[in-house]
Image (cartoon, rainbow, N blue to C red; front, side, top):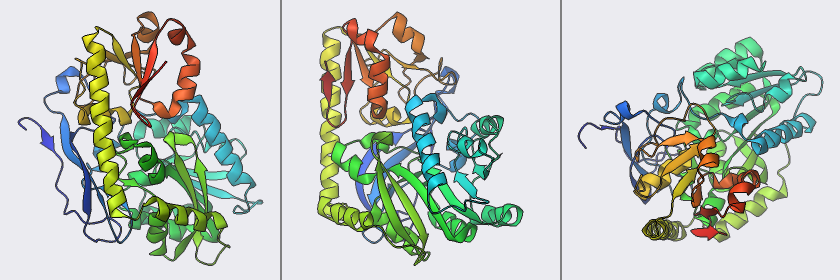
Length: 417
């Protein structure tokens, strides 16, 4: 691996309980999921060995190694939440559910969001004059949040930061996060900080991609450098239980191809909703705590990989043009795991200016503007943001009308006519 920088090795212990991890799947050598780069940066590109393991004790599925946070979250972070209309609508509804809930002081509420990105959620609290604080480690998106009148600090959250917040702002009613907790390797430290910050009747409400959906749909591209964990109600109950907190409610979400919203509080603060017990029973029957069933997932991933490579190669033999639609972090896992490069994908189109004119991580497929897709439509387009398939296909009716076809790999590899 000459001229390549490799991540530090990990001792293969669970980040939650320190038990030994059992390796489930090896995705091989992977670059940073959001590490879109210029041609001059090819030689110095960072790679690491991406494997997922399972702890029989904590029931947590997790990356065995993860790049340092500073490599992933920085002043050129290439993801802005507000680019999707569906996500904007989702976060407006999320904010409303918190404001209307029993968990928030109606007279002088205070909410914190961890990983607030460009302020897509907190702006709904800001606009109502609700005391709030966003915590965002990526400088460019933190600046964007502040532009939208969202009070944001650019730092990584920790127990130490919680102490500072406590002194300056006081205790919080609701501590929120969306597609963020699964990014954080030192979760015990984070939960300690949260526990210090919430009021006696305060809650933590967060949502992340759900392990049960990943297993059901073989959506293995939910695994990439930023997603250090894949959560279930079982593993979340274990983690927060270590800190005298408990899961009091769960609500499935459609975002990110299948997410779960977890609500947690100090033990005994609230009655536990029956949805929690029902979901845990379902997870046990699905085998989310069964090593044999989890290993079956690895076999399904391998089949999905072979099916996708076969389909793309067959189309190329027919001289078909193929483009990727949306330069996602998830696509980095797909392309590098399946060794899909410019020989199979002509280009990737994307609406995010910071990605345009660059190349995809690892496989170095050119990223072009969405206008290129309109001007020069391919014969086939791979839905790399398959979790936004409905919104994308609605917006691209003209592509379909002209005879363009969509390819998806979730829940199975197929052409959508």
